[in-house]
Length: 603
Image (cartoon, rainbow, N blue to C red):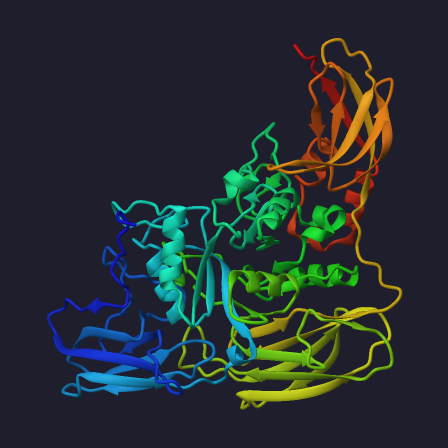
């Protein structure tokens, strides 16, 4: 770490105008524990310019929300000799405090922040697994220590920082190595915050996913395979997403789709950023889909929830996450039509069994013990079980308990959010609803009785009084004897195997293999003669042709069948992900796969 320097803390602020009159120290403490608490500080007053935390080059770190400075518990700075209001906040679990400072007032202020709720006491921890320290624009000079400080002050308990781009944009500062990243994350972590690094991976033409750290930290792409981000004419992605997930799971990680309906960039006839492979995975690799981020784009987009409800009704057990895709190196405001980075705006609460760790968070997400929110804090139990639990159907009456707390506004923490509506949704339809029209309920607790005799699912949705504030849980599941877990769809393959030079039909064997960058595992073998094979193979496998005197050849029933890869997947649009007809089209194509093995003789 000798060549790694930490850039200046963004909370330290000096006003260089000529009207400096006060040197102020502010200490923020948790009202109960009296421990120093990282928090946001917003300074407001007549004629007072916007005060933002500064990057290493002294530029304003203007992110989404009101101007603010991030402090690690103590802030010292110079302020004009005018009346100033300091708004101290730490969304979404703490109540906002306000301090009025007049010229000539005391130099040091101690602020006690009170909790509005404490989900961590019950094992629920909020965080985000998708943000970039340096996305690439490098409008700001930031690094990983900057990002972790801001994250703490924004009030999350854990963060996973993506390694698909860079970890520093500070001038002349070297990119940290794997060991550096481990050390920096360990240094930033404490009893109240866990810093992790992983990758937005896989990230290419077939979709963007976010991952969690591996057991032995390493860069993801060299291990699990690189993809092609912008697929030009004739190019072919080397690995399907579920093939990369195989590698990640082998190493104690996994990956989840993010912003599934996003349409951005791409090439003619092949829109970019969309989760192109997601419908295919639902059909041929349902084992690879445990959870999905539904809030990054179009936070309350009805189409994305229609897709999710449809998949749940088909028997898939897919939990919800809420990420941001924020970039610490970008700045700007809506007013100037620039970047507007939502640092920790959406959050994923994960229930962990013991202490917070990478493994505990990943296990919680894969088990569906999650709640996504943009404001209200919600805790839900069904017969004392958390979301993701599977109950047997029958005559048993079960008690659904919902607790919800209003949260201060992300954009303006002086705006005190309340709870306006609670809904229970059953199999995609409204089951029960409570409305609090007067907007005075900052804490609500309701119960309901559920008796379920058929296979299905329930989720809870809570709306807050501030625009775009809502929370939604992962499902509770009911499983009856009629339930059938989604299985891998088999591809029906017509294969020809010939000499590449003469076209002569060959005899040999086909191995059905689980393929990824690390290994090729033979799952089944069948012989063929006269250069022809017609049969079924699991859709998540590839075929390896083995002929004596020839080089082996591996083909994918997806990547090497143009109707699927070049036509159906290429032309996908956001509406298709929620359209059952698109999934039917994929299945029909999988039922008529044609592959041609042109074998090269050994020299």
